[in-house]
Amino acid sequence: MESFVPHYDRCLAVLGRLLSELLRVRVEISGLKRLLMVKWHKPPKGWYKLNIDANFNKNQPSGLGGVFRNTNESWIVGFTKAIHINGALESKLLALVEGLTTTQEWNLFPLEIETDCIQRNDVILRHNFRQGNEVAHMMTKQNEDKETKRKLFVQPPLFVESILRRDQMEEVVFVKNLSNVACNSLVSYGNKCVLGDTIYDCNALNPI
Figure (cartoon, rainbow, N blue to C red):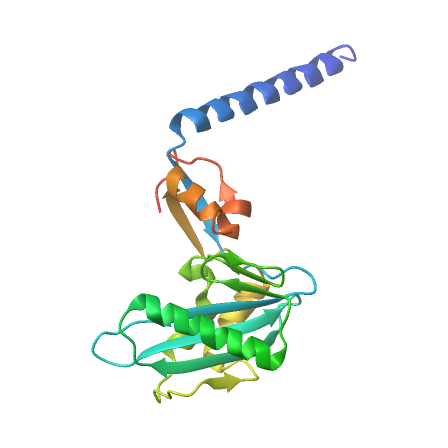
């Protein structure tokens, strides 16, 4: 029995290598899609994060919103605003403008912004899926009085508190099934769900 133990360990090691190799080959051969775990990610230590979103309604006022949080995942300030615009792209750009205006007023640097991707020394703009950007998304939808001036919230409103708690627990809120081509494109936009939360190729799993 004593002589069997080292052989058993070697067999396990060989089996582990074989399984790893089979998995690698399977991913290379059938790696057409990946499952991504979507969630909110806190900013790096010493940074702030701004999540922004906007919606476009052709025949009525549209809305934008955003929220700032710190490394401790604490609410700093949020904002909403009703807007009259001509397209979805314009609404996103206005959300960014309002976010940067608040950043300057509150001196919230260095800053990471999630929605699309651009980068400079003290501002990083990243892409995230809507499900990982849910607080900002809710802020855009709650401008019930259609206030066209930016409205600030120094405390989180009740309608986002449950989402904030979920984000603080780093819960996966959605699973997306995307092609490798789409994943590679999102990497260039700094999407952390692709960079850090990828489940290896899952053609064998049921698509979500």
